[in-house]
Length: 133
Image 1: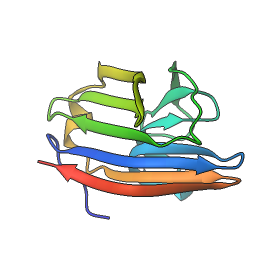
Image 2: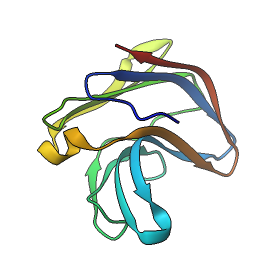
Image 3: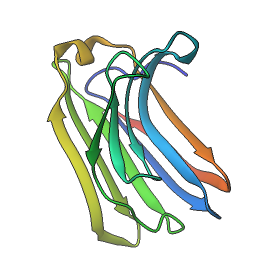
Image 4: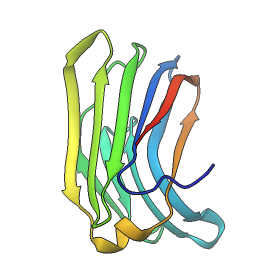
């Protein structure tokens, strides 16, 4: 995938099947070298996970779990100075939502992040993918 530049918002519509757990967010790096920077939502733990240039240095911020067998939207954007804004909401019940807003440092604004989604067990169904400029 092509890197998503600062100021662009990525939006997906998704749901899971079965007992799937998943991670969605922005990622840059190589897992084989453990040099990874990543901001993601972890459905298994109900956390926002921040990988600080290493798979060994992971900060977990409590978010919440949801019934992702229903359609949900996920949006994420970042600024050139490292501000992140991520939101998840249920398509048919938008009041069922949670978010993260925070500054991860100016170096996070310069990284060449790509959007990613991975899952374990079941499946993760992606219906829409948009990049809003």
